[in-house]
View: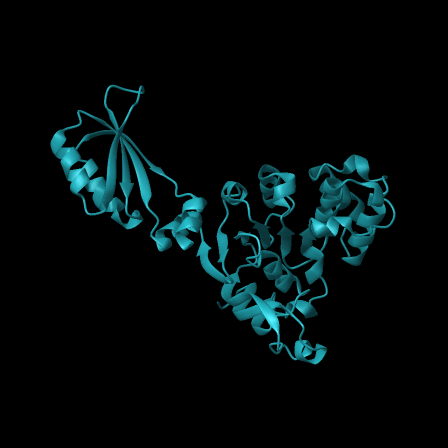
Length: 317
């Protein structure tokens, strides 16, 4: 993990009734509920990831640990070379739906100016103009912040996060409100090049963001990587569609007797006069040998169907 920007080593965290002294010393309280157990992972300064898991799996707690607003019972957390609680701007990158209800004084412009000045942003008026345009709130700058809708307030919070020098941007269920397409535009635009963690419990959102995933299950981080690499690691069944001309029985027999093949289906197709095969594999490690067999036919097209996150999660139950 040398050179990691965010680094967790054997982190345990939860909530309970420990004394202030115990919390100060980072000791395990005498009575607490463990929400996260033995987390070890690292992120680079430019990594953008999805933190995915069901409700109660510790997604928000993980974000708050990075922000320094929650203290681990055990383990080590380092963000940009410092413990999160000692970084003056660590909390400024945390944007949560619940936070959209906090009191913001003055107009939207007042809020953004105060944020920009606190973080010593160069060319502040033009930078505010850029950020508000991207977030679609340029017409709200003279509105009272307290009178905005929840979605509008979230956009203001995202603008403040973009203006801040927070080491990590932490978006807690925000993609459930703003739609994944907009989040992807922010990641490639005003958030580009910044370490960003997006928490969601929604499978469709996690898949559509097309980012590496930190997969939480129970109280643990069970996988970390692309959906493809996680599916391979978890041994998820894979499906391949192959369009072939002149399908022969001997080829079909070889496919069905292949040690990695669970099922071969003939599917209807109106795209050409040949046959369409859907082949279900035990896992991706059998794909190279499968292709050797299929190559014996007149192959028109072959397509690997991506593993679903639902299948991966289902394998953990």
